[in-house]
Image (tube, rainbow, N blue to C red; front, side, top):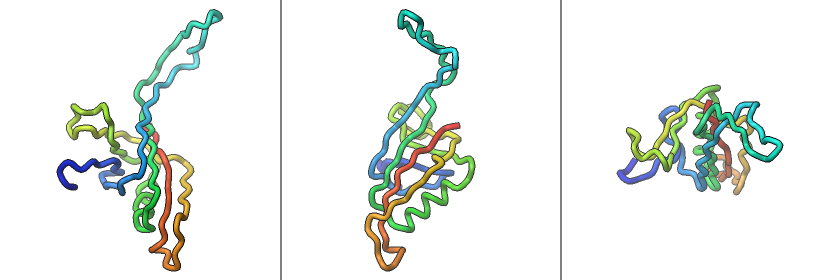
Length: 131
């Protein structure tokens, strides 16, 4: 990868095709005891902070690129490295690696069908969820 080029996604160390769209998603999890009081005051018991589930969309990818992404998502558990705008101080700046899995449903959509399937263009949207 050329110096200064952003790597948006790696799965198990393999660089994936550059996405058309990327949404950095980070969430907190609260315990079942978190709730609002009768006066509307939040009583919160946060049990986990900063859980990642980045979302990616590839608007136009080739059949070969689609195959790379889908094959990388097959294992039950994968190492996902994603762009993190808050990770400037990491060993690899702006990149964060986590153990996770690809969302359960993947629906590649044909954008431009061709007689030769290898020439077909696809759209794919999916997210990766941190364990």
